Length: 130
Image (tube, rainbow, N blue to C red):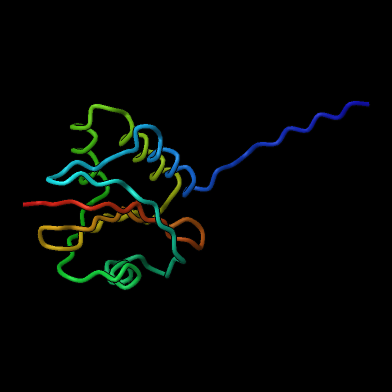
């Protein structure tokens, strides 16, 4: 008797985002300096806010919050590839309570962050904005 078992491998959101970002060539956020993207996870507090992100990642300075689509739509329009759109869609379908935070004055740390169960996941990159 032959028994066939079908196993479906399900990626965590963190793995899915890393797969999109690290495909050849790896994704880059273009500004006055080109920055690679990193995926970070941490335990989710009741609310994701800039104070929590600043404390976890040891950031200081001014913070600016942007809307998820408001931030990503211009990047998708300028990029010319489908990768940023694919990342946006994966973030939207996998996470909830999505936020975009920019920390710093000119040299900025940018976090796209949302929740997944008891975890929070952040896509982090740097930018120079003058």
